[in-house]
Image 1 (cartoon, rainbow, N blue to C red):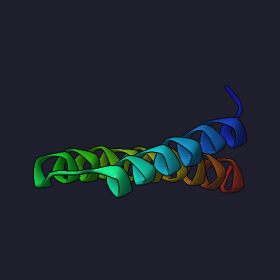
Image 2 (image 1 turned 45 degrees about the vertical axis):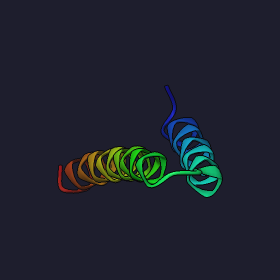
Image 3 (image 1 turned 30 degrees about the horizontal axis):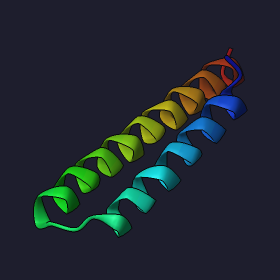
Length: 61
């Protein structure tokens, strides 16, 4: 899968989780939505780091 496509999917996932958080009616639902949102952010961060590492490896070869 293309890196840009992966990022686009992650951004959509973050938007969905944000909407879920805003619609949460109880504190438990808010916590669950925040956990999912944090997971999405961490996954995105990991993908960006991997891409940067690949770029740096190519640059220094």
